[in-house]
Length: 278
Image (cartoon, rainbow, N blue to C red; front, side, top):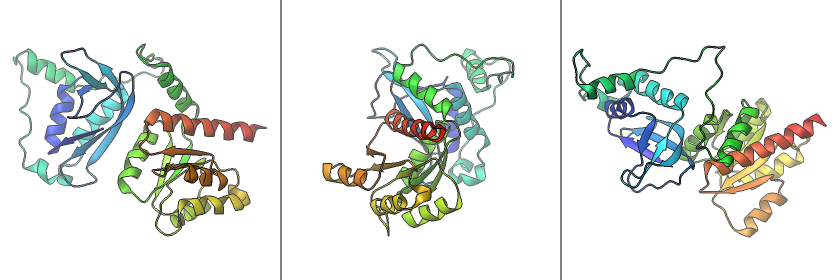
């Protein structure tokens, strides 16, 4: 789900004025309790963006659906609006920043000032805030699995920059470490250089195809048990059968939902960890 802002001050003004909740972009839909990846694009050029996981909820008939953000993710969005260099945003330099807040301002500006102040950090002796009672059982399960596998390292192979950015950001939000490459040849180099817990692989790649890479890895003793997940738009029964015959452990068809992909990845990581322990 993409939010677009013409410049950095526009983004910052929205984040500061809101309270961990945002209305949906035009023509977007979300179900109550559904987790999505919210992408915030600043200006027209690529690369000026950030993202955070958010949960859909119903604010009632008059206001409709919105997205709610965890406090840590909202703080990260606030930091992005405050700390990003203006020199990297030409449009922002020509915009007029919001006026300063002065003593004696009305209630609206006072609320604006309070919203801009980050909450105090948790002390080491303080327990983390309890999960919201509104979380669905499936979301609670996903968050528990994420905590169990935090720091697991994934290699994402896809020649589409936008897909790498969205999927990579989503997985990092779940606490996973993600390296990204755009070809099978680059993936082979990365696998020979570093150790990964799982390979997330596109089917159609420049040069060597994803299916061929999967077959090649399964013939190498050092990668015979590396979990491999295809993430692709190829959805025919023939393609799925070929992927599993080549040695894939799972197959996720685009477009996909974040909870589904996360659940499949954590399931494979858990299975691999259990296999290592035996």
